Length: 248
Image (cartoon, rainbow, N blue to C red; front, side, top):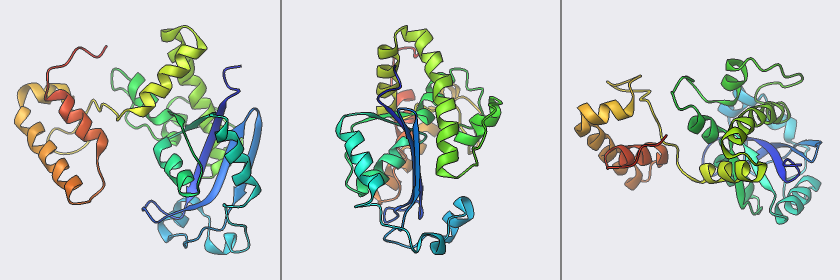
């Protein structure tokens, strides 16, 4: 089975900053689900509690992730070069790496959703938005709960896997292409801000390339100043400001 080396995983964390850590992990591997609350080494932020409803009191008597049974299980799983499947997978992988786990291969359903939406019809690509956009019926899948989210994640993965399989024809080739896409920044198709909000980036490049040059300069300045690097927009702007082959 093509799913035998796929681990569907989701994390809930103390926040989104560089210092933040895990407070909940859930995964499904070879048909078995596991979930655990964990005591993080830093407090859970209020913003995170508002989303996850996991409080510091709830994890006060829980074990730390490092040294836990779940940590040992995940260490064994990833040592065998199994593939992490997650939505916004770089975030989850980085959180796991903070805990000493080695993640080599990733499938990011967020990036796959972007890539396969050739016509830019889907307004948003968040996990729960895709769930309701495609009208998936999923039982026992509470949003922003790690266990609920992996149940949604697997359904969304299955949907896009079938689309990729129709293109690549074999399970091995489909999985390989999904891994390849997940390594690269997203090529954004439409602006979702500014004076060209809702317009195709390609169209703006033709009529106002100077705007793209200005925006790229601003993104590069922000990166140089130590702000969050907007890899997707930098990649997109560089792509459309240079000659390139047709994508599709």
